[in-house]
Image (cartoon, rainbow, N blue to C red; front, side, top):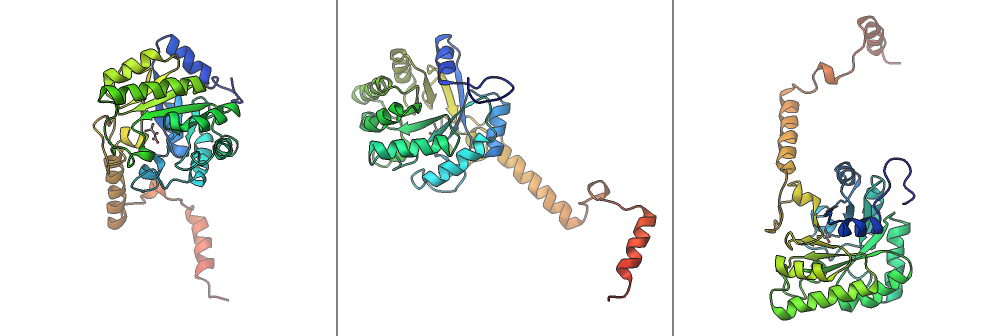
Length: 291
Ligand code: KIV
């Protein structure tokens, strides 16, 4: 349960575990502001992630690296205002948890206390264990993120499928087991071959949520702007566009522009009207000589 009042109880870390145990697949989408979080809530997803993909799809950067704690707190707050039932997870941005475990705890705490998230997500494997352990010890639920980790993509092989060789697949499994041991409540695995992801999933007691990692995971996550067809700069093969809202939006704005230019908008039903006798009085005063 949570501080959520009225309606259905909020999804918790335990709910996710119970769903995995029952074989129910988990649904997670990103959101960045009040409207996108409202849409995700209305669609009854289990988890809303304020992803640092925010940097690319909402702030226009070329990568997630420039995203700051201030950005994450600002956007998490907006999502929290809409998020009543889904578990709200906020991404820890690049360099907000790498310096010291104490820095990681302070910043995770800010996303919870100031942002209103219920959990944080941290990218990386065993190299991030000191930070993850410290955050968990402080009582903050942590979600891991393995495979393709966008914050450090340039350090590795770029935006490429990970875990294709026996050694690299084993490394991801060992990272996942170490993260589980450290107390993370779920792990996102990005861009890993489907059978590798399934093998990892079989070794974990907590949920493995895939993105570009096949159908064998315990759940799936997509970036909301991708699934709604609102972001065109980068479309990885694993993205399924369930709608083309970008095209629909351009069409709507172009129609508004056309009707404004040809004078057909606003029509009488989109305008406010005075009764004739009131208008006569208004007109007389308005046309009276200036004082
Ligand atoms: O930032 C993000 O959107 C993410 C998802 C791809 C899982 O981390």
